[in-house]
Image (cartoon, rainbow, N blue to C red; front, side):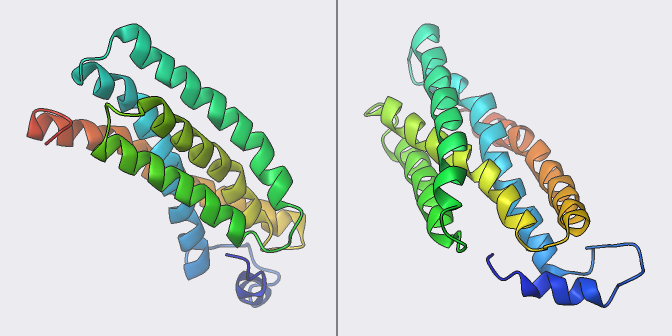
Amino acid sequence: FAQRHALQSDASTAAGHRQTFFHMPRAWMLGIFFGLGTASYTCVLAWLAPYYLENGWSEQNAGLLLGFLTLMEVVSGLLAPALANRSRDKRVALVVLLTLMTTGFAGLILMPQQLGLLWTCLLGLGIGGLFPMSLIVSMDHFDDPQQAGSLTAFVQGVGYLIASLSPLLAGVIRDLTGSFEG
């Protein structure tokens, strides 16, 4: 993610032409990364409370999890970029955020009744920090603001298309299996 020159060399060949990223593998990789992070958010937002309701939790407690999820997303969304921008290499921050998110998902799947609040908070910290970091990583590929903006627009376009399918796919899987437990 941190190799700025990979896209700049491709873009320099298109000098004088309208910038397009459709033939640049790294742009697609960034779009897919953004999409999967945002898909995690949309899926968790749509299905966390119903998942816990199905597991016997009250509406109040399931809703409280959404409140903690949102709080952790805000905290991480503010802190992660500030901490990550202390270094030019953003990989450590990305690995930490992905680890938080993966641990949260694993906990929800493997032990949903035990430590549900912890799993939700870990998810919130991971997801909340990934959103701004995926934009920062995209913008860091170019020194020119116009090129960086064009790449970020491409990344968001691809990413939001991916993310828009996440709640639907989770719902279809849930309907086909009859429950969240499969």
